[in-house]
Image (cartoon, rainbow, N blue to C red; front, side):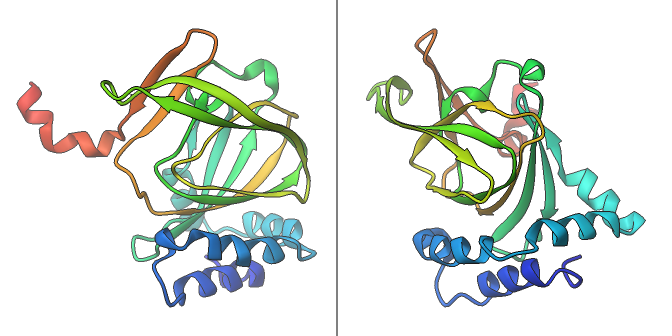
Length: 212
């Protein structure tokens, strides 16, 4: 799928040939990602790639993509042999957002680097306090809030917490994600003060028969 796209092929090759485990050295990936994302023509390359997908390639993208409460997550590359995956996030109009994980204070099971291709959003980073008994977030304190615009880059590690409370309609971002480094993630609703623990559905399959 990436043979027509030299920028994506370049990044994929560099990640595949890294001489260290990506998940444990994600700061190095950030050092590669920022200059890579700054090159001209990235949007044109991505646009051309999507326009020239074969039927089989389009089916594969659709099968791996999903809708969240705030955006559509389009999977461009996710091979089991790779220690990373490539994604496009297409943000919905604000009036179409639904309350949920994506606009809560949350972390992820994986590390990621991202760049804004078009549009903008407000990005908030938080410090959290974890309840020793429940393992859930009991409080969150805003550390930094910034308006991020086209061309801006950011990196989030799996143990860092953030929130995107607002995004311009049509905002598009490109992300490279590591493989999961944790079996769960956490979220916190500042309005209600309620925290949640999130476990992916695939991890529950082995116990499904016992719960019937």
